[in-house]
Image: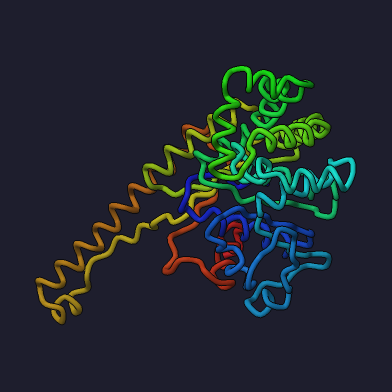
Length: 354
């Protein structure tokens, strides 16, 4: 299950709450986040999360009123894109010498940090790895904000295009790399750079492409497998949003991309919805406050009622535009969710227990 949507709408919390709720029902669940704020660890009561799943102590959740059914386990991790990409190279490298040559290469060090879509690709690559290991009944993935999540959908294809593109193939040809570049006069530039910085960029590039050459097909095949995982009927997307105008527009945009890619859309979670509670300031309180302050209190109550009415309209628009998918509405809570109590409260709304 992949939770996608705009930033700042509670996507990380929703991912953790879904995972927690399913673990409470007896499933072994892994939740993976690439959220840079690292809020998931705090919500689960962990000091920190790592690049490999770490089991959440069930007693900690039981102390907050949430007990797991027999067999239920909750595991959590925060993705480290570079470490995940390095692990992919480790698995594909034919021998230790090739692996170390790649890791020590400056070009690889920069590429593994900056390659287009590396964070998005490595997120699904980690999901693919966990899926292949088969240790979990359910995997839940938190994602970047939806505009980046479009990169997330396209990342496997972009990686294949990069490693099987004409430029890379040119570099991998014997004598093609140095001959083409130096022949164009670029060698002078590389020579000046070497004298000025002490870095032989031409040599680094040559070593990199020579070392990576035997891994290109393996990387491309892994990227295709990752793309297939996204398209698999067993992978479902949940769009998480709020009723505000911009998040609603982004949710609609992302849904359109999912539909174009023919990927499974499971439903909506709309967080932070204001619930209409029309009321008037009681006469006794009005006398105690005085007309001026009572009038301002009434104006604030009326404004909240108007915002709640607008939220209802936003949800209706979402449902109409998306052909009335399964939708869960989570009300705006008194405080932001930053601990286990808040996580348990969100899970109760998601699973209809309250």
